[in-house]
Length: 134
Image 1: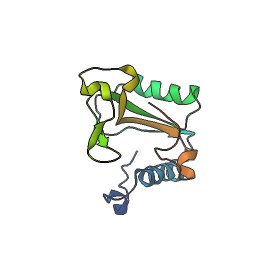
Image 2 (image 1 turned 180 degrees about the vertical axis):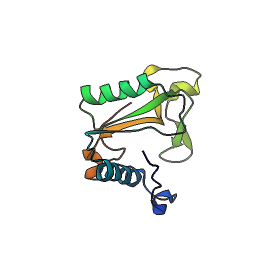
Image 3 (image 1 turned 90 degrees about the vertical axis):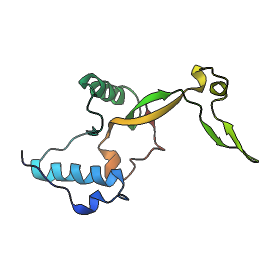
Image 4 (image 1 turned 135 degrees about the vertical axis):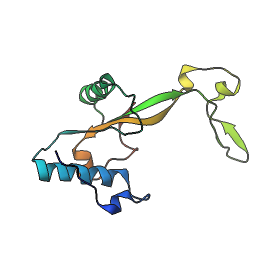
């Protein structure tokens, strides 16, 4: 398999991830006549990701009615936001008291695995406001 260098405009810092993935999938379909139903994006910055994690993401996509699956980790740090009137206030109040309540758990996407249906990039709907399962 030959290495394919992507178009320079896809390396612009303002280029959306969806356009980069769309270009790669379009190229794969055109050059190799492969038309996937599911696309898995595995980012290079996560070399310790295991095959079982990718398989679990694929299984989750197939078993649940979601558009995409992203790998996450539970972020137990104190998170704050602007208050309604002034100042800041904690989002996860218990963390401000040194407690860890499961109902206040916040999840952070770590971008190690991102699995989604091919149709999502066809119609331009690969966004975070869609149905996601961590």
